[in-house]
Image (cartoon, rainbow, N blue to C red):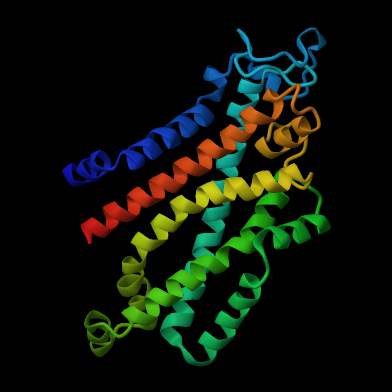
Length: 277
């Protein structure tokens, strides 16, 4: 713990990242208590306060139907974080397992699994997600499936590279000599050495998942109104720039804070896990 605190204090950007991520997570988890107008997350209309600039009690202003932007951003964070956690919870086990199999077994398995991975990696992530969402109804569940379909290959490539190097190490050869099964060698011997890199990438990817999901919503292919979503909020306000600037600026800044924070925390985790190793 002293080492972790020392690394964080030695790098102000890492400390800033922890603060930003803490604010995003706390805002999402406690949105019901922090949002001044929690009912504005849904289909609420208040034409007496529509399109108001930032002022008390609407510190981020209101949208075109009078809903408080600050409240909706907090609930949008909840949706974005839930999307990121679910996507990674599905994509990481798939990618890690395929990477272990391809890297350790080699031969035909390596060729087939890595060529499949290369096919997915050859398609730009946003284009693949748009193609999938174009075939499905634009709902939150389908958005998760679309993002998951393009995310697992990155973990496959990462774990495959590490496994190729680790399988020639002495501890792996020793386990094979004493008769350990292939599954034991892969998941009990090699996998623990992949965990630091996987955890670091997961932290970095949380921000990128939020960015991709917001991009889909910006294009009308993600979470649908009246559910608050950062991308759709930016899209709705883009037509009213520069007069109603708050409609786009504050949701855009919310995306920036989340992505920037998770990237800084990912860099800090890389330093911490590297130091522990």
